[in-house]
Length: 249
Image 1 (cartoon, rainbow, N blue to C red):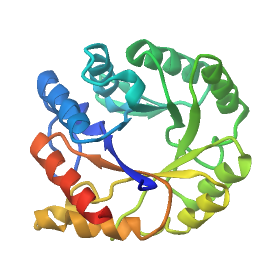
Image 2: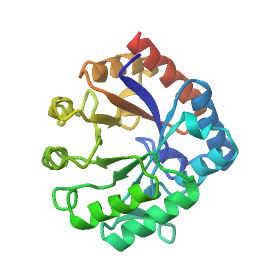
Image 3: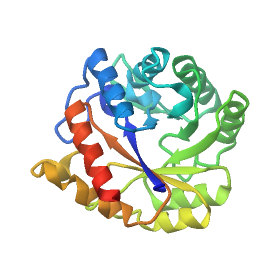
Image 4: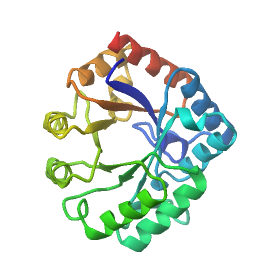
């Protein structure tokens, strides 16, 4: 069994995203995307309150049994929230905000398998408010914890804290700045959640067949965890899934 699985990042079903700033699909198209992912073998689904409608749509897929709950991993985040009034995501790592975010996520999703700290930095990744919120989440059924990081210093602090099982971070052929994180995670027996494998679509914009090579490049890092593919198109998703399976075969 491969130590790395392909997961579906659900930012693009909630709000405008990608190098081409593609608008999110309507609800039924988003549900079809999730259903397609599951039917093609995807079992890890990553969302966040900051992704606008994303959590609500994933929750709907779960409630409609498009995703058998005991066969999938639901990962979400806390620490950044979407403000529909002005269409802006704002970070807030206070305990009260984190607790409120957790309550809302549980209301929408029913259960959380992996809870990640969104917009983690060196100041907040080990803060008492964050760890208190994690303790509360654990008492409410959250199983594992992660941090979404964008710099090496924060990754080091998170690993040394002993509180995290996952780190999510961007890595691709054009952005290799966090490559040392892979070795560090192995040393701490932690898992990676790699996002932006295609640099928000920029690396495949002029070569749709490049996906297999891009996945293979990431797999060469020899790690355990997940590579997230993010798209709002079912056809693009199927192509990405095929590219991933070709890369690991």
